[in-house]
Length: 259
Image (cartoon, rainbow, N blue to C red; front, side, top):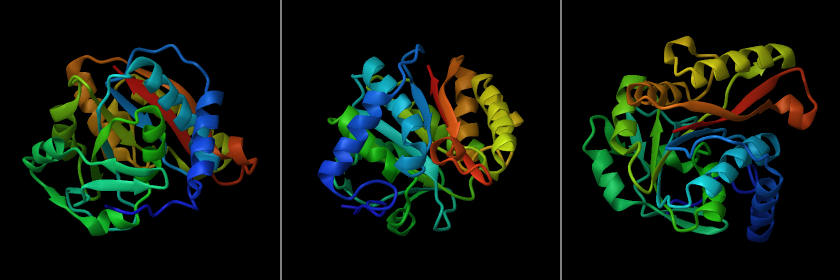
């Protein structure tokens, strides 16, 4: 099992406190009207920062897709070099709430794609996928995961992995990404609003390196969604200035549903 690395920093390490925190965020989430998602874009900062936005996505997921039994997680590697895409090389991913099983059949299909390898080292310290797991454990307790990190990777390399699973019965694709980083509050709001327009319009070319830390994953999803004729909706959006009150250097967060 890949042990948790972000417990006690990005989210509570105590199982009871963690479950209470996730359930509280879900209970407070705004109800949104959007199609049942084939895919979600969800932020991955600490729960004190992006938890409310993430909870909006997961509450929508729980209401509209209780059938999901496999979640394909796609997110950026922050701490290790990854050439292509990396699986965790583990049978389960741990959180304080217990292990989340890895979907062996889904991993086998992922490994057939070029550039997909196992890299426990890439996953060891990474939070971008881990912070999604407690939300999944509370909202979809029967789900297994395929966990893919990417690094020096183009959207064109990530998109076949997304195309492999998108729209499959019982499956959800989840791209983990925050939005702009370290801009003043108003500049961040303008940048993130432009990013939201690009995502909901399915315009990957309108995004740039400053749009999102998970840029390749977001662009890859938009490429596939455009080919499939999907619709995208912004479920929720804010930045760290809204959750902490510090407006000098903020990080943007958005939750988007594609279906």
